[in-house]
Image (tube, rainbow, N blue to C red; front, side, top):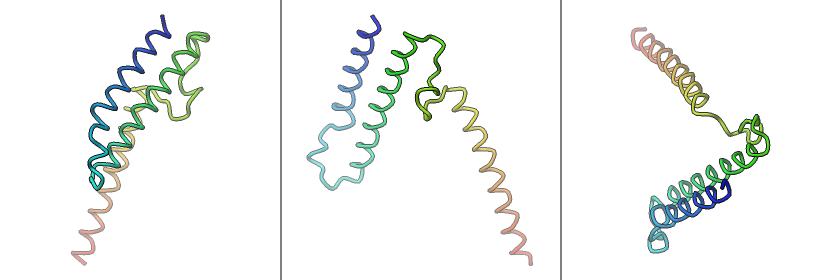
Amino acid sequence: MLLRAIAYQFSMETRRVYHQELKDIQRRRASVHFRGKIENSHGIMKNLTEQSIVQLAQFYNPSLQGEEVFTSFMTRVEQSLRLREDIHVLHAFASIFCERAEDRMTA
């Protein structure tokens, strides 16, 4: 059952990549979006492959976590927490930058 589900996911995602992301890519040789389309396709297929491997591994070892298999594999909660931290750091950096810019203008 799991293998059928994974096969179905691969068929759907492959179809989506070819029909949406890579559609008419040969005709647009100098397209600005060429690289982006390739990167999007790569990301979609990489994510699907990693998720499928984790699903298969969890079938044999239900306590296994995705982070144990792939270092780049993170749960949505972990992604949200990291994004929150990154936004906080960016805000702090922007605040310091603006303060220093104001100090230079008043000096």
